[in-house]
Length: 335
Image (cartoon, rainbow, N blue to C red; front, side, top):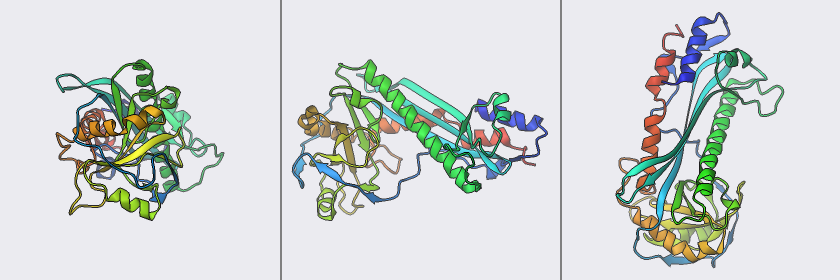
């Protein structure tokens, strides 16, 4: 059970503060599955080709490689109560690096997690919660008087939780990069590359992006990307619009999409911006093709999710507070 929610429930139960409005029972917002950040709006960003535009490479058969570590993160949020009309949002974040041994069994290398209550200090007194031993986070974003709209305040809290999750993933990845610098093992990250990879020469890190909300090529070039067959990759390019350091990237089709969606089985690979990545683009692609088995069923994203990342998600799910647990903390307080 969440210690933070337990303390919050105890504080509300024992306080006489009439400004608390509790949300409990079936109205308590929460999710049983790993909750990800909301999908970004579709957009088009520029890119810089590294290999000739329109390049299509058949990388050959999948081949087991040096991917031995796998990182993923999770976030969950819910709104157990309001304080003076201000939503007090519970946020849980976690990140894990799982290790695959020579016997193919997965084990946990490092796990980080945190929880806090998110609210704008400019509109609600967080001191009352802090004195009760509860961790809080200010969502005012530098505003002396945030927008006085509960839905806007709720959105600001969720964005802050997603940002904290990103920082946690960067922290756990940076630790790995420092600890394993110069060794032969590679780390695969679910999503865009994170951590201090740009501080290392030729770091052994690969990112796999499963969503395609952002398009990096004009229409005709995008047609070639979406026409890739299983086992083919696009040319290497530098995606624009990044807030982090630049990377080399390319598209790779893991599974045939005949009779399927255009994006079925299509992933975008990221690796460090260095000459070694250009030399290893085909080899890294073969490593990823080798990860197609076993399938990540019953996950609906099985066509783009390699099994060790699915394993990370299942581990994170087993450690995160469930909706049932979150409901149990607050039930009866809203009567």
